[in-house]
Length: 247
Image (cartoon, rainbow, N blue to C red; front, side):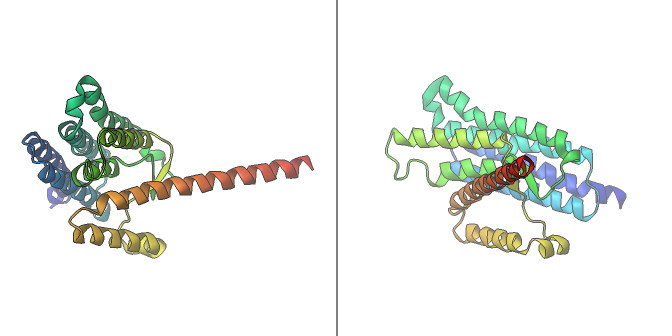
């Protein structure tokens, strides 16, 4: 029973890793849409292993490290290879660097997250764009929107801009909301976030994944706007404090 309790969350993590590996194999066979599907499946397993480990109280440093090793394959290497096969192969060495950039930034982001995990005060937010969200943003754009309605060479410019933005946000200090936890306590404290996330998942399912990129862009832009407003409020409060001291 003890082995089952501690082992099941790790099986979900390994399923995440296997899904990422399978995505790479499919992408190498130019089956990009199917490869994207396994990146999405990896994200589902990644979410479930965290939910399950917290629910049964078996979260551990080993689990965190195993999760990060799996994530760098499923959400770093697999999307990077998708970028390479879909577009950047034709740009030679520069294209290889651009395709690899999200994987490199993702590795830095995961390493920083593991170091800061024990000191994070607000577990409802991540510092920097989470690597699964970055992977899904890039891969969903490539599969559903890349080169559709965007004339060359603007298709390259748009994709490069998106890659640079996502890579930069992963290593940034911008806080991004965590995925809602479907527990009574979380849903009671964060009812709006839970409802919005649930509706978003349903919309993605109904549209067969086509709504994923627009919804993730709303998530990214919304987080940036919220951080901008928070910084403005903090600056204004600091200025008011200085004025009150000098009066």
